[in-house]
Length: 382
Image (cartoon, rainbow, N blue to C red):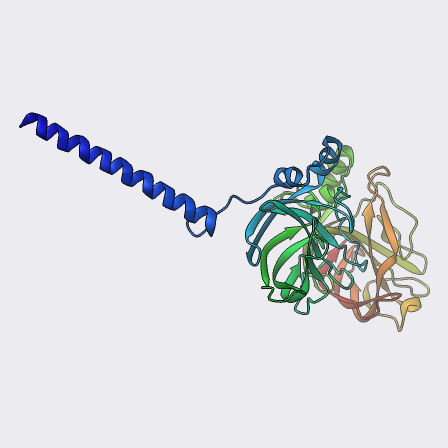
């Protein structure tokens, strides 16, 4: 009786083991067959290097431009991408990352080399138009998104529908597109997720430290930052809308290093003869600006209200894009091609001649007359 009991127990154990082995085989077959139960691991740059059989020197050049992605593909191609490296329009070698476009420069084209299964592909995203450092969504995408096989030049999914978006930095965004290749019976590939062909500007700004974004974006020297913190970072209450949007609570007016007064002068806060110059420099988003208030009045400028002029040559104020030069005590270097002039509204100068209010619209120059910025609130210089 005891031997019979032991025999039954052994048989049950063997049967359970065989059942478990069979279940593992089924799961393994299902996961490798259609991915329904076990999702494939997202591919990385190392997977792409392996598929392409790249030489060590080519791999070394590609690693610095290997960027984090979060892209999913379904349909004719299935997979997910966690990394891709930036490449050129031809070949498989790496190229430089996309750089953040200056305001009104064209968007860069994103070309990403990635692996799907055992094959490599080039995903191309070509945003049309110029950057205004604001998010843009494209709903007409045919001709702007393309997925091409590296091994088979004829496998090109270039008939696109859906949408994609570009973030304000111009070098990253999202997409949700269907791509179809020109082949009989071909099925579309749905591509969705987050892409990047460059890196946003790294900053160490502290929202609790006034003017810290300006210090960080412009990489100012520690000694200049200390001086500005002590007496040049002044409280403001200015709201920007239009082509530049945001609220400004502090700006720099560093009278320790004034530059010649004028429409693009820096660190001024005084009346000189028949002109007055108040300059404020600051950062909003990932850009830096210089606002110059410079009315003219004979025989001299005093407290009061000053209306915008009738054109760029009679304007009472200018707003410049540019950077603070860390090698010259943070003096502002204006971009002479990107600025706005006061075209409507006015500002006031208070009795102390160091503060006032503003409610004025600024209009873009050169090829961008449709760009406007409205500034409203109160200002102060040193």
